[in-house]
Structures are given as structure tokens and as C-alpha cells.
Image 1 (cartoon, protein in one colour):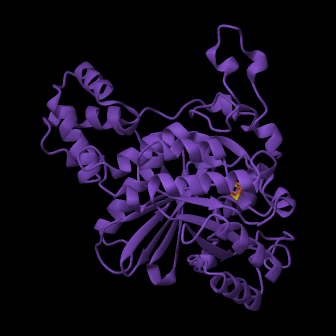
Image 2 (cartoon, helix red, strand yellow):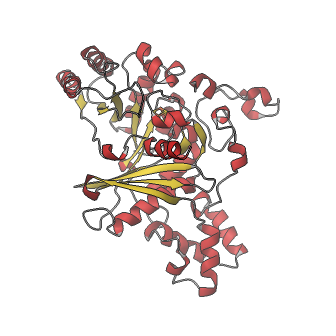
Image 3 (cartoon, rainbow, N blue to C red):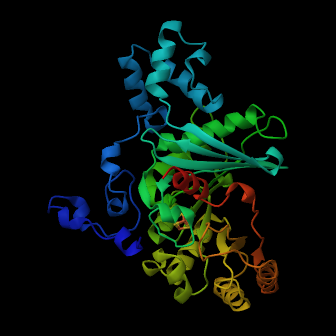
Length: 408
Ligand code: SF4
């Protein structure tokens, strides 16, 4: 799928009265199934409808209005928020502070089941758990919970599939089906927070501390829902899960207007840019989005994000054998980053987790080491990214792709 088509303007269908007709084509969408992303959605997306509205999708006023329809006073909404964000509860049986007659109805209305576990894979002695989820329309997404000695990180999905079309990526091969709702995104977080609390991850009970938007999808392609999720993840209970915004990472393949918009949100989230190549010539082949926003535009925006947020930017770089993992690539990457000054970026090379039967394969260990050494010698902070879950199809989209293949 080409990214040029991903951002083809839809304005031909607009009228002079449509304010969006004159809006510049930005590459970010407000969310939903309209706008520039519409034409990369799967053909049957319209038939799928919208996920049921969830507590997390509603403003406080909307929650109060809905509660009123059920005959519940305003303070019951605060109780529900406490159940959801503080105790991770959505079951009527847990709402013991509610009149028994209203528990079931409140649970059904505010907490429809949005994600249902299809399959769980466990690795790293029980410290990595990858879950494949079924959504209301049969779409599949995944999340990965990884426990470390001093933190527990959840990698979540924000779209069903991805429309960016990177040829080496399993999710890219699925194409984009639809954006996920805020409720669907947040439910991944709530379930993982509960799993940590209940001690379902090896190491005993603990706390979910970090969130990375690096699962399926391009977060900037579902900007509004992602930002609403970020705010609800970081707000203190009972308004959110209380996970510090500093511990949230939003990744992008380089949607420059999205990076610039994120910089204006005033949230200290970390930005991760999937660069994968140091030159336009090479990146054009690996990341179709580069034809829209080139490496200079992406790095300029990433550096501006660093200046605005005072947070070091992560540069993600999937090492592919013989393609982008040679000494010349490392040297050019160091040069491009050092052009902006010291210490503003942290490079995370990661050995590619190859798709079965694909020509893109992981680098040789000696090439990985050489790549890292060259960056270090050039004064660049770089750490080989953890390859947690490699034995469970750990790269983004691979589990969903595998199950899909098995079923087709
Ligand atoms: S690498 Fe990221 S942006 Fe590219 S297709 Fe895969 S999920 Fe989408």
C-alpha cells in the first residue's frame, strides 16, 4: 500500500461550505473514519460500524447525562470513575457501593466489553505476556506486557492494522482496517494494570508503570483518540490511571504535523521516531511515508519536540541485514543526529524480527555491534533495544498476522 494514496486529499467530495475543504492536508486525522486516512481503510470498514460507547469515550457531562437516563445521580459517576481508574473494575459484582438493582445496568451501559482475549503467549519465564484481542467487529489487535526489575511496560495498539505500508513490517502487510476508539485503547491498559496488581505476571503483584504506543498502527493516524487515551492514562485517579506522562511514549513513523501538534499539547510524553534509515534514498524504500515527510523534515520536527518538551527523543532503527546495518549507515546516522547538537536523541537499534518468508532479515550480531560502536564513538547515546518476546512473535503485528494466516 502506498503512502501517497494514504494521504490523497478527500476534498474533491467537499463543498464550499465544508471548512475542511480548505484545510491543508496534514497527514494527521482527528480520529474516526473520515479525513485523509479514509482511503487507506479496508473496503468493508464502513460496514463494521463503531465500537459501543464506553465510559472512557464520554466527557464527564455525557457520563452524568447517561447516568441520569438510568435514574442515577451525579455522584454515581464519580463512583464509577473510581471503580474503573482506581480499582480496574468493570463488573457489576464489584460495584458493592451501588444499589443492587442498578449494578447490572450501570455496568452494561458504561462498560461494554470492548476487547476479548483470543490468545495469550507467555515468554521470558512469565515476565512477557502478549495478548491477541478480538474487538466488537471481529477485528484483531494485540498488546504486550513486559516486566523488568524496576518497571512494567505495556506496548499497546492504536489502530487495527496500519496504513503506512512499511514492506518489512507484519502489520504493514495487513493494511489499515480502522482506527480504535479511546475505550478500546484504554481497555488494554486497564486489563494489564489489573494483571499486574493480581500478580498474573511472574514476580508477584506489582504496578503497571510505563506505556508505549508501539503496537499496531500509527498513533498520529488516530490522533484524537490517542491523545484522549494519553490524558486518561496520565491523570490521577479518579480521572485516570495515574501513570506519569513522562512514562508514556508515543511513536510515529514520521508524521511531521503530528509531531508538531504533540509538542503543543504541553504533556511531557516521550516521542519515539521510527527512522530506520539515515538517508532519503534508503528511507524512501523502507518507509513509504518518507516520500511525504523526508528525513530532514522528520529530524527537524523531532529536534523541535526535544526543545519544546525537554525530553530526549527516541530514534527507533530496525536493523536489517545488508540493507541499513552497515558502517556507512551508522556513520551517516551519527552525522545527521549530531548536526542538531549533543544529547537530544537516544538511538534504539533493534534487530528486525523477520516476517516468515520475507526477504527482510535480521542483522548479523557482529554488524549490530559495529553499528552500536560507531554511534558510541560519535558521542551518540544508543542502546540495543530489548528484544523481549522474540520467541513469541514479538515484533509489532506478527501475532495478529500469524493467526490471520492460520485462519485463512
Ligand atoms: S513499521 Fe510501524 S508504521 Fe510501518 S507499517 Fe509497521 S506499524 Fe505501520
